[in-house]
Image (cartoon, rainbow, N blue to C red; front, side, top):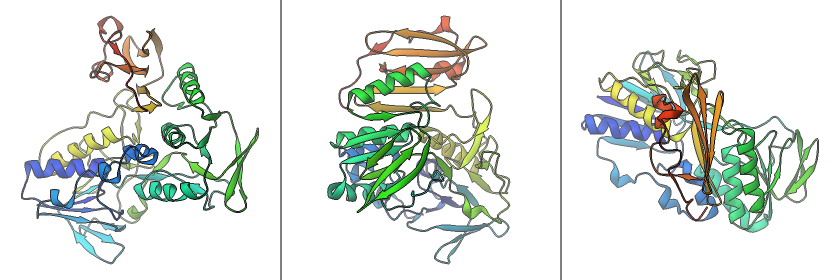
Length: 398
């Protein structure tokens, strides 16, 4: 069997591992755009703050690959011909396949603001992004402004503050508003402020002005924030420009539309990860759930179906965990419904209910390991919960 995998992130590597476990003689070609060994982007903040080496980020080495796996690094996918079953690359090559898995991930979105194309503006999505940022820090950066108060913006603020820089976090609304209720967002803001991060919320950003020689000023309706470097954390969009002319359908969210077996609208073509539209397990709504654990799960489901198994993806659960100067904050599932909150000296836990069933959880502090998602996935009731008081001390460190 000749299988081509586009992308070497969580979905692509999970799929490759699954295929090789069940079909060790399968011929795999893994194509990805970065000119380095596959790594985990989840840990980029630790690399930025200096507590993790580049080697520690790598998910595999060339020695890990058997002879029947071909890693094609540093190449862009330009086209897919589903009739001929070929993938066109930017170097002119056309790679044939029997089965194809698309897991090309996503790229940062940029707000339409004057000035954001300046060399002092940075994003944090890839190792190359991180290296570019780190290369600039020793030369000129003491003041850092971050646009966006979602998980990426918050993690960047923590990492850069731990490097001894002065950090301003600028947001349109509240901290991680899609993940936490207002009072939990406020508590997270308090942790950031206590550690020295300047948090500016409710800001309507108008423009970014250059300040010679290489600084910037972020202009909002309420303030002007001067900085040596600007980090933009405004969300992501799927990497799917190469789909033009392929006939592969996209969903309303912009991601590749797949069924429960991760099959696309094209025969012999599957998709997984941050570039696909799937169903939310809790709400049933279709959308892109661009998180690492779901990419791994989707990659495995896709791989099993590609090699002949009949396995259905049950839908994803939106979730995220961020370690803020040693205090973990966690959110999973929905924010819509009735609430039940418990507070101890060690943590605050809130469950969200719909029709008497738990559909979401928010935690500030460290719960005992294991079982956080189980109540949501099993539709537990409050009377059936046992883990609310099983809390442990937050770990030291970040």
